[in-house]
Image (tube, rainbow, N blue to C red; front, side, top):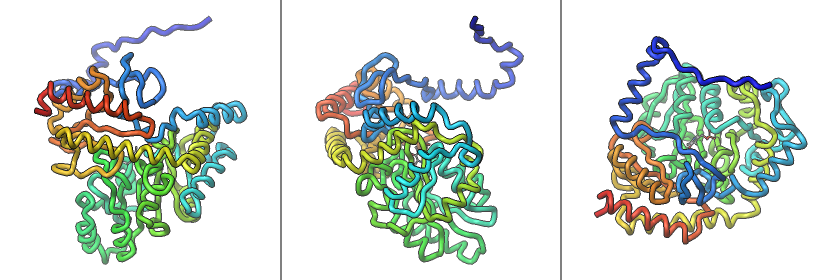
Length: 412
Ligand SMILES: *Cc1c(COP(=O)(O)O)cnc(C)c1O
């Protein structure tokens, strides 16, 4: 016999306890930036169905189509059959499986570093690393557009945070000079690719600074993993900066097509994180299926470089066509994209959300992003190209972008 539970209705007096949240949601509705989660009905493909509507999908981080690659699926299924559905413990207690070690060794070899540790996500990799390698007396120099997980890690570390203007290496140096004689350690940190604007962080120049001032250099390569560098080795490879970045973070959740985050660096760094990074110590490791699909993904990066070539040629074509049609694709009031992330800058939050909704109705999934994810007045529809979009699909999407923009007054 199964027990069924009726969904409970909150009594009014309990509802009152969270009235401040309701008020904030009401304010979002007023401002036109309230959203409902769109629900994917099938695989995360170049064309797929959300909420029962077939759309050309320009919103996923599935850069190389690995989410639905048969080899990743097969690896996940085989690992589940052999090792079970879950790992059953945190890594430091009893939850380190051979397949977890295999993945870490595979990534370390791929990235050409001494060692690697895999976390549950890119978010926990960043937050867990920044918070554990620094303390109260230390300093963090952070790009103003760095990802939320870096900001949270910086706050958790209780180090003093100095924010430099976006990609402004001279400003970073100015801030470093101010604290040159302070006893604390200094960490310089940048995204390899910035997720909202698609521009590339000045990893090489910041590494120069780190060397000049004896600072630790760290890069978050979430959107560069599988996208930049030889076979998708990331921004350090892109800049030829091997051996100059102490801490390299990457994600397994975007181009790699599965889930997780990793940190690459010296053997001592990785050993230290095994002992001190709180998400590693206090949260259960990946199911074997996840580790297995990631291992399969790195084999594909090595063996199917044509995916990355297609990603970049699709990107170049799409960007050019959008710019030719008269869209603001960044570079005027916002940074200029250099990667498969192409924002269409609209400015006003409500207009952006309305445009995104109209695009969806017309057959294109391109998510609107407004404050506080991006600065006020710089709301945009963000697109991400993949290797799996056909030229036909891209052309069809472009047609929809233009016709909906003309209808809504975004283009004249
Ligand atoms: C997505 C992202 C992360 C988080 O990675 P997950 O694996 O999704 O947790 C971290 N940093 C940046 C810059 C990102 O874009």
